[in-house]
Image 1 (cartoon, rainbow, N blue to C red):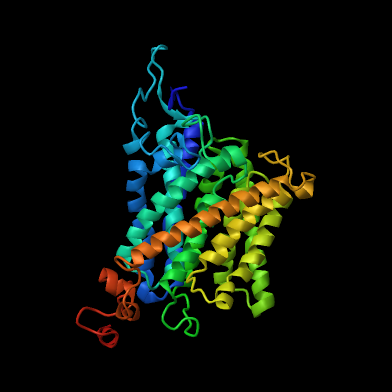
Image 2 (cartoon, rainbow, N blue to C red):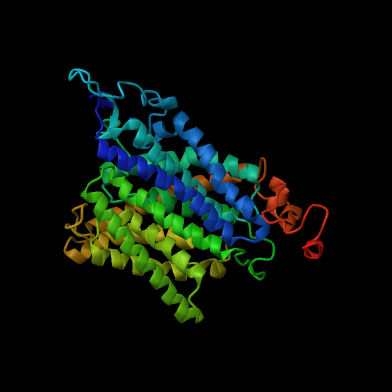
Length: 448
């Protein structure tokens, strides 16, 4: 069979997927605010730039060879053919609009019922935010140039192949697809492995190799702008409907079911996180609410198509509570994961992927029963193999990439740059200018 298929797209599905792609893109600016509010004021622009720069860099790589590596014809069960769609060859073209002549309908390259170009754009947004997620682990101390080099190499060596394993189902862009999706048949509806476990593992390795921030853990590194954090969490929750419900690739019942389970699990995770804070610390916090939201979104991502309402509640409660506890692991084990990428994304991704084997039910769209619904342990085994295969690959590959950069151009900013703040040192800018040029805050008061 020739790929891509040529035909007329479904208008409703296309409209939904265009909206979903835009929603997923919005998640990256949301992440930028979420991370930016959590760092000190002298590093907020640098933190935002790490997310925004991923939007530029990964878009270019995706269009050149990333999409082809992820969704091209399978090569050795490891990666798609990087030349099949090089430069997005074959993605555009055809008759875009039908005419009044029945013999001349619209006929363009398709992915299922939607234009292949729309699917390319939708999956691009996943690649962007996966890379951006890593940056939270290395806040306050990574050189911006080194971040760009790392992001480009990591996307090429780690994300594009893993996306092929997880998302490339046979029969769409080629006869053979990725091994997790087609051979193992682990359930990962929207990227618990390829996105969250992958990024969380990379964040862990990178922060270990980079080293601790000056003064950590004795010096408090308090969030400088909690409203930014809450805004970012809200944008992430909003955009995540494109992430999860959009992964149905159609405006259908699967999209509706995943939309609902995503909402339920996220709400439950937020409340569970706040409860843990209240019991442990005596106060439920806005930072905890925002973090709980993200933890629930992370955990329901792989599970949203395989659980019912009770299962979604379970995913939310378990992930919210465990992630709230897991963020303290960095103090116990001494790794400076600045913004809790490991505690939220790695732990949340593992919880969401593995819990499918327990609470999946055949009444959900995936049609699989987990252990608690009489399905035995088989699905749990499949979930574990998929999760830990991605974890192991990301750990090893990230370590190789990070050490290569460390011993060539260097990873870490100088002590002077860290002390002054990376906004000034790396970008020659400051986020907040409270004084007029040539004056001080005191002179501003006098002039007013």
